[in-house]
Image 1 (cartoon, rainbow, N blue to C red):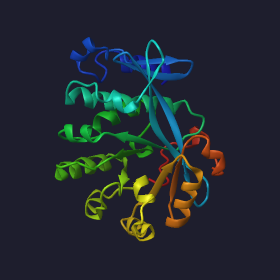
Image 2 (cartoon, helix red, strand yellow):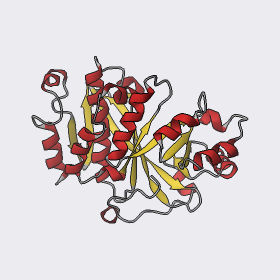
Image 3 (cartoon, one colour):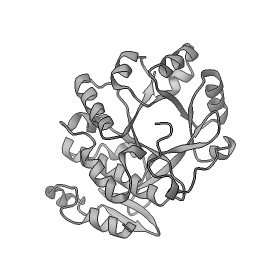
Image 4 (cartoon, one colour):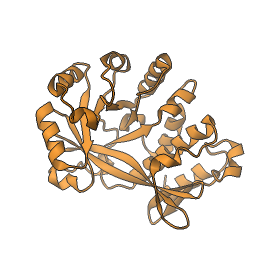
Length: 281
């Protein structure tokens, strides 16, 4: 389906937004300009940025991590992406905003010449607010876009989550639909292998505080590999990334855009040949 038709379908009633949000500016959220898709929400323009993820051993591109950029709709002043998620007035609107952002990233990923696995953040509040059938609504949005859950890894920050049984049930639902699971900020405050054994993530992203601490990084990574899970780090400093990869047998590096050349990433095949790829997730 052409991108313009996808946008029209997502924006038109009934779409995937509840009717009462038509009064809050969410009824026509997606805008396509020059082959890119933007999201308008609460007088804010939201844009997608994709950071390459490469295999540390081979330099091959595994895929990309989506991140959000926000700007004032009229003045184009940058806004912290985290601040956007403070705006929803209730859990229902938060869930829809979180889903809108992931849909934005999926639509923009379709326009890339090369793809691979797409790493998308799912807020813990979203996970805890949805009672059941996690991943179903997003799957129904993805399929008309020509994307499948098997091409998506959902990244969740589980720190501070109190209802662990609900979290385990939610992750099991995501996995049953084919999504990969990534746990981020691991080791920021504590190291809990018990919950990881319950969640069985495909990827564990180490927190920067863990990488800079005196903790036995090599033993921690060996334990993560036994789950089994692949270990990912991300950072801005090339030297720090290389140090972490060499010292800890890291599997994946999430590079900020300029680092892709420095890491000698090998491009993926064209997107037309990359359908349903989830090589490391």
